[in-house]
Image (cartoon, one colour):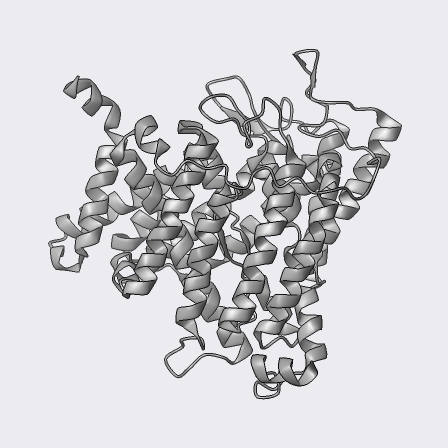
Length: 479
């Protein structure tokens, strides 16, 4: 058995050992297992255009989302290890899931939204297989891609602050939002959030493996104790708001730690239903937005992991790059087909590589642990959002770190980048940020007389975004 693993995964050839690969796989799991909790919290409480929650119910079903999240992450991560022999784990993409929840599902049914994710994954797969990915990659300026990642980071952070009650609407025209209630932080749940955020920051600063997961677990325990002592209750009681209550889940001790997982979300998607709901132009824009975030993020992630593991060639391309991209493309479609949003490569895999992982065996170990986690998914129903959303703020910071890669002295890229970053959180729409950035980029090149520097695909996408923003007056004019 040992000899077979050595030969298949080339463990010794890459300067590693089976023990090191197993340890690296466990570390990677610990650093990204939070997605089993976080993905249901992002997707589970958002109603689609028909007023239904994910899964077609009238009430959230977090355990079902968590089970499917862990299952897909486990299967695809094992596939990455076996097919590509690369220490890279996959799971539902943060930022991508927020985009699906807040920008896609709000316009159609959840089944239609997941159908778009499947379409996006299939398109990426075609791009990979045909070699067209380089053309798409070159179409968008590198710094604009960076701005998209940074904007999504700020958007995620704002969602976390709002869900925790740290930031709230004021009910006034100015300022429209503010800190806490009447400018003051009040209520036990907000205190729990603040403690959880500080704990995660401290653990991250100390480079503790699994800092986010440890923070969520510790803060949940604190929340349960606080609720037992203070009895804050829910934020909505008999239809009346209770501002100092828990926003989503009231923390409590679960009756059981394990149960048979419910995989009822699998197959809950409609491939072409979105075209009837929102029209062809909007579908194209939404799919392209998903494609941008998913495809370019993967390119950067696999290059970074390969560099840290010493698996890149002289041109900076990871070993088996084509296989990596194929598995990642399949993961995008599989996430939509399973109803848990696009699955993508995780930069958290760097933690396992930092602990010695060099082969796909580490990914297999991570995947097996995700599969085992499916029986523990009922726990998510007892985790309050105040204990989990500090992770969104921390992840927002991690994504924000890329902002230094933008040349802020070059207005031709700085202004589009600024609009992309600013409008995502300010409009609560990732699409709006991307669209504004693309339009501004093309416009500035036109007024500067640098039309040759605009890729043909940018002209097409820029035009589509103009139509997207003006869809209401255009529709009125046509009718």
